[in-house]
Amino acid sequence: MRRICVIITLLMMYASVMPIPTYAKMNSNVSARNAVLMEQQSGRVLYGKAEHEPQKIASITKIMTALLAAESGKMKEMVSVSNEAVRVEGSAIYLKPGQKVKLEDLVYGLMLRSGNDAAQVIAESVGGSIDGFVYLMNQKAKEIGMKDTHFSNPHGLDGDGSHYSSAYDMAL
Image 1 (cartoon, one colour):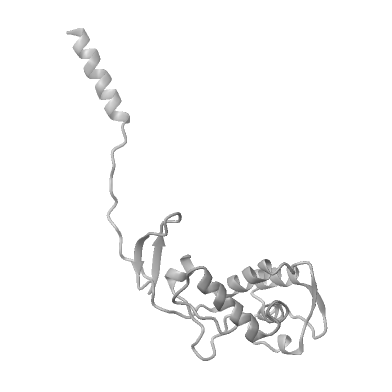
Image 2 (cartoon, rainbow, N blue to C red):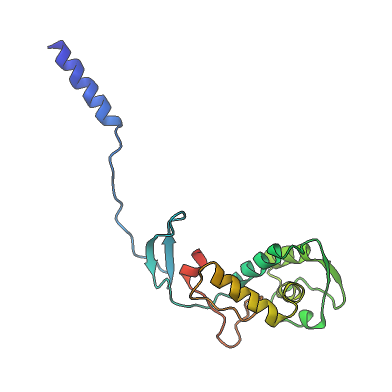
């Protein structure tokens, strides 16, 4: 009898430490118009709400600008600020025409102060022109699988509606 009690006790102890799979009920009460929850390694969408619907992306654009600057191999180079760059609207790091700035410092100004003027100078120096840089941005977007994204400038100001992305693409 004692042996049976010991066996039952051991089985109960063993069963109490065994993992039991549980499934949480999905709370689909997300207030955002667009959302996506993606499993990192597989890319499998765990939750989506209008995740492929294009939206204005504003300063999220600056992530792509910073990425292209970092990949350019020119981060230690000094670049010159153009007259056009200081005239860009919106947030700025207050560059002066003709000023020489290290590209790396412009990326800091871009990401920490959301400097539209910094984005413009980065685009001119990495892409040769704004159009050249926008081309590089759209090529990079295609390369990483962004299908619902189109860039029209390096800073995110939306003038004509041709600058957009989706929650899904941003999760990539």
